[in-house]
Image (cartoon, rainbow over all chains, first blue to last red; front, side, top):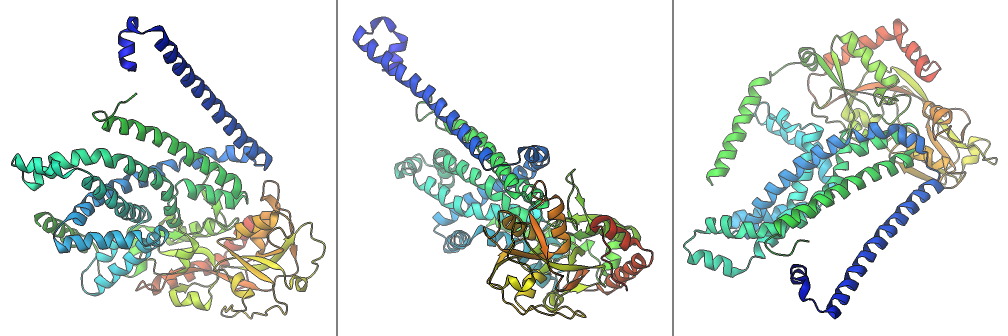
Amino acid sequence: MNDLANTTPDTIPPEAKLVLDRIDQDRRRFKVNLVIAFAVLLVGLFAAMVIIGLDFKFMFNWLGFIMTGIGYTLLVSFLAIALACILAVIGALGRLSSNPIANSLATGYVSLIRGTPLLVQVYMWYLALPQVGMALEEMGIQGVQRLFTLPAIPAGVLALGVCYGAYMTETVRAGIQSIKIGQTEAAKALGMTPRQTLRRVIFPQALRVIIPPVSNEFIAMIKDSSLVSLMGVWELSYRAIKIGRRYFQSLEMLVMVAMIYWVMCIILQYIQERIENHMARGDRRVS
Amino acid sequence: MKKSGFIVALLIGMMVCMAGTSVAGQTVLEEILLAGEIKVSTDANYAPQSYLNDKGELEGFDISVAKEMAKRLGVKIEFITPDWDLITAGKWGKRWDVSIGSMTPTAERKQALLFTIPYYSSPAQFAIHKKNTTIKTLSDLAGKKIGIATETTNERYLQRDLKIEDVKIVYQTWKPGELKTYPTDANHIEDLSLGDGARLDAVFTSRQTLAEAIQSGCGSGCPLKMLGEPPYYEPLCFALDKSRSNSDTLLAKLNDILKEMYADGTLVKLSMRFYKTNLIPNL
């Protein structure tokens, strides 16, 4: 209706125009009110920080040092999400597979990883792998211990990637299953093999369903990447915690690092919206 | 199937390559000298032992001692900063060669770690809030809430379960009301600074940490005061991974270097610089 009105303005009856104008006006008023409400919220938040007596000068002095940790945070998160995506696709195919070995492996992986805390997994990757290497070396395979003794960053990437891979396996599986059976049947009727069907018909459509929850997982991962600070990676939260303890002013540093994570997530949310709109362009109206 | 076969082949290939580079039967000392670098773990949570300075670099007594040790060994130094629990647990798997982090050689730790001779000793110390007027002696702490850091000798002492070789431990006759355990000392110091009795009545840690907090912590000095004499002094040592074979020569070498640093006054000088007092025992 709106599109039609814009292209041929002469034909709108005056009563309809009044209604359309009012709708427009309401929408504009809502936007202005929304901005005001957000501004009030921000001022309130800032006021709360002043009231509890945060040492802003101290925070400002260390801002640059803490911010340099963003590099490690992003590096770990990006590598981990890439690993998670690969694992998720393999895992989802396994979960849907009629091969009992592949199916049980994938189901076991998802069950084990989803059923244990990420914090425990981070310690396991860091502490348990060298033991495995040592045991293998004692069995006579030379040099594996060094291979298994991962430094902090690869161990962190593995821990996060494997963990999120398990959650995303279910997302991808649901995405694939959300494609109507008729699509598979039609592809079969056209003479496509199951592999071709998956690649050309199912995946492209499933991707659209999968993208929003996957971006959601990525935003969650940015924050969970703080767990690698346990292993001594100098990322955002490691720096904030150490400086806070050094000067016995942990609260200031934690508030600051929380703000940095928040801003990062706001930016990522914006990017997520753009990607989502792009993926959905054939399917829904993009304003 | 074809793909997984490829991955297995790749893994085996990698293992073979790695195997080629490792030499069997080498001592840890030889490995370090060959690499030209020693990896030292430190926990940067403790000023003035080990902390981040104004430029965000590692600094402190432990850091200076470590650098001096590497210089005398003739190798470069790399610091690794894992969580304290990961260091005390042992089984480091060659991630780092030695821990220089003011560690007390307790009986439990000796099961997982090897210790050098002590490089200094640290007085344990109770502290209360500045505004408190009712607690005057250590025995007034009976029934009070006391903050301690986890996996420290302070915790063990208050649990009456502290064993340090060559150190006679005399436990207090009174019993604390509640022990509140924190990840690290800075946490309980901040909690006590919130106010007298707000979350804690007293804390128990090393005198150096308290002195640093009172002097320059919490913005303009934490509102704490020290209470009574140190109940015990603990020797502090470098630690090596017991599960790593052929560590004996490195241990002997580190002991030699420490003896040199005792003899030429280096340790005393560093102690005066960072602690403003001499914490170096007579050897």
